[in-house]
Each structure stands twice: as structure tokens, then as C-alpha cells.
Amino acid sequence: MISIPEFAELLAVTAKTAVHLEMRDAYFSNPRFEAWRNGERIDWDDRSAWWRPYHQDIADAVARGVQVRRARVVSEPVTDYIAWEHYQTRANIEAGEQVRWLPRRQAWDLLLPGSDLWVFDDQLMRVHHFAGDGEWISKELCDDRAVITQHAAAFERVWERAIPHDEYEIK
Image 1 (cartoon, rainbow, N blue to C red):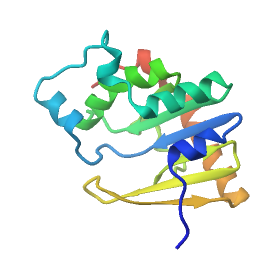
Image 2: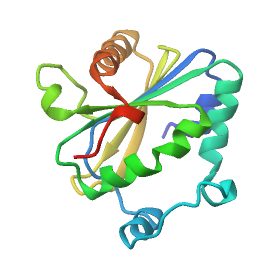
Image 3: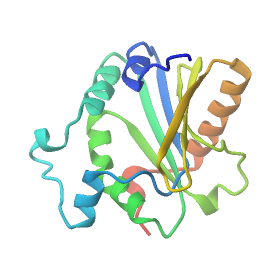
Image 4: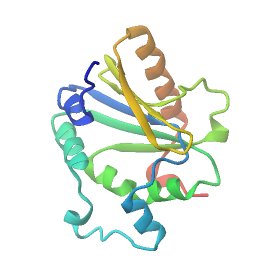
């Protein structure tokens, strides 16, 4: 069985760009989401309360010149999970990610991938597979240039239409 590098390892060797396309309206539950659902909110003044190793990996990549972009295609009205993601995206922004949102009804004429993915430097793609209920199933790597080019182009089409995070209002 081939070992798939962790995200941090892939990002650490990325030189120019890392793009992430998210297609789901709900993902696996986690304690931070459940706390938010129960009314707990992040103390944004206490960075230690919300800054995670992921955020540091992004900040390190951005500091060395990597452009990190995330586009989320979402149904409206949004699910609780997407509302929580929107709320906590401030942490991604603080780390240096650029984030945009595209309502699914505005993406109907785009040919989009069936799975979430990351594309690193237009050279390598990490695909994420989830079950219908949002539980994590697996990940795989793709280095087929033709496939990566198609998926990177799909990301760019979404990015062009998507709404910057600070302008997107939850509906």
C-alpha cells in the first residue's frame, strides 16, 4: 500500500500555489462544531484558543510566498456545518488563506469534480473522499498532469465566480 503524505508535508514542499476546492454541505462532526452549536463562541483575542498547527502550516507557507486559496461551493440556505465553517473561517484568513464562497445555484453550469481536493503547484493533487454522512473515508494522490489540469481549471472557474469571504453573507 502506498503511503499518502499528510497535508503539512505536501504544503511544506509547495513553492507557489495551493488551492483547495470544497464541495460538501456537511462534514464529520467534531467537538469544535458541537461547541459552536451549543452556543460557544471563539475568543478571537485569545489566539491560543483557536490557532492550530494547520494555521501555522498555512502561515509558514504564505510567509515563504505560497498563495493559498480555498473555494467552497455551498447550498443555500446553508447547513449548520457551513454556517460554522463561515464563522470559524476567520482563523483561516488570519493564517493567510484567501477564501471565497460560491452558492451552488450559481455553479450549475460548471463542470465540477465529484470530490474535495487540493492542488499543489499544479503538479500534484490530493483528493479527499467522504461518505454520504460526511465521515472521512480516504485520501489519494494524483500526479496525472491532464487530470490535474482539468481540476485546477475547475477550481479557477469557481474562484472567478465566488464571493470573497468578507462579502459572503450566510443565508
